[in-house]
Length: 276
Image (cartoon, rainbow, N blue to C red; front, side, top):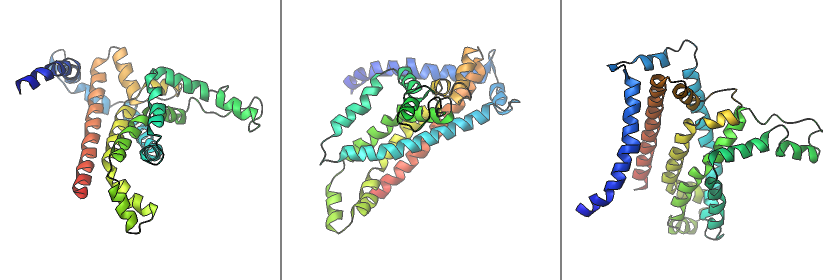
């Protein structure tokens, strides 16, 4: 036991310095002003006369939900394909998923700007094949859809990998038993594969939703600054030396993320009980 504590000591120190201390600082700036306890920063958020904070928060939540849903719709078939033992292709697909993650987040986003801009690769290709006339272009960039595409692209691996991890460890005897009992592929998926993969789905939803709801750079680069997300408001508050409001909004964001994690954990527990 003593050796385990010694091995855990560096990690404990790291957690205190980079997790506990920053959280305490955020809490201090959110609840204290000039050394006095105050709720003025939270009141300023909810009583915003310009009606900016709450609509922006709702927009961020909606985009995060859309991003999570799209990642699930795209990622689950990919994970299912990777886990198919007959294909023997999981390592190749895994490389294709992970290699882009080695590149800087901003560089990946700039690549999407090149693809989506008015004179970008997509518009030029459509003009070349005759689907668009020369000089015409589709409005792809600087829209909410472009931001959503960037979010899905950047966070998709966080959905695929947890689901694949669960599917790869699944006991295929259950599937063979269902097939022996006469279940068709659709019933096998609905009755066996999908229920057994619920823990991976819940983990993937959590891992995608948390960064998606707090994203901020994508809205500036792919949205052209035409609309703000909640992460943009937090960033602008800190860069403009308004640390109190920025900390209050960060505290609200953390509360929402913890709430979403609690909901996902409840679903995970209920799914585990049904499985048992």
